[in-house]
Image (tube, rainbow, N blue to C red; front, side):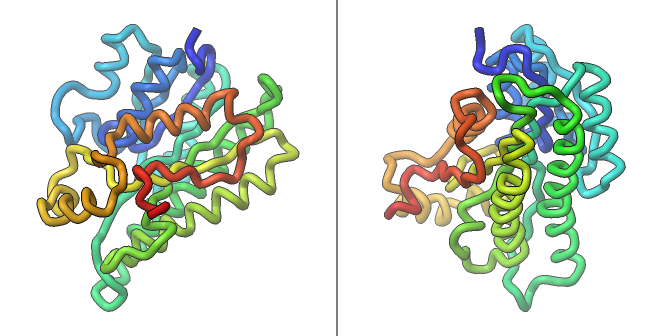
Amino acid sequence: MGLLENRVAVVTGASSGLGRAIAIRYASEGASVVLADLRDAPIEGGASTQALIEAAGGSVFALQADVSQWADVDRLVTTAVERFGRLDIMVNNAATYTGTNLLESTEEQWERVLRVNLSGMFFGCKRAVQQMLTQEPVNEVRGRIVNISSQHGMVASPGDFPYGVSKGGTVQLTRQIAVDHARDLIVCNAVAPGKIITGKPGAANDPQALDYSQRRTPWPRLGRPEDVAGAALFLASDMATFVTGVNLMVDGGWMAG
């Protein structure tokens, strides 16, 4: 049996990158997975996340959703429960990015990043907790929330103002929910990736930036989406029942150096 056998998971931002890796890993461990994103086609290219899970014999359903809209998040969780009966795991991964400092950041940029990255996570957590409170516990837990934060929510990155602030908010949001809902038997944790190589084009794969990240990371390689998926699996499983309110670094030792 897999670590998530008979569990139901919702993963936002599941078409590409970290969300794609988490969804595939959860399905491989026996979970029924509901994929949420604005697009089906992965940025990396190739088959969709849904197609890969189905080809491997997994249980999966995909739904278009904009996490910055409460109505979409409400519909997402409602559909997951209608289809699979309950919600055991909510992964709030969907995010947007803008690499600007305070003076360069426009009001529109600020509002868009905070709306997706922080309000979207607030919506996902709130709707998940609403559902989890109606469920009977399984192995002492009514449900688990896994939020994807960032190393940039722990230390400031130059010229990364709206995104960094949103990820700092993610860390505190996670702690607050963990404390407020521990007595309800709801577990809430975050995963904070360091430099992870995905298929995302642009500044993320700039050779100079990659060289700096490699020199700054003690581990002899940079991260892969599967590294984050492994941490997200641990926090979603029964192995982590007494772990709540944690922001788990997955950074190859960057923050330890």
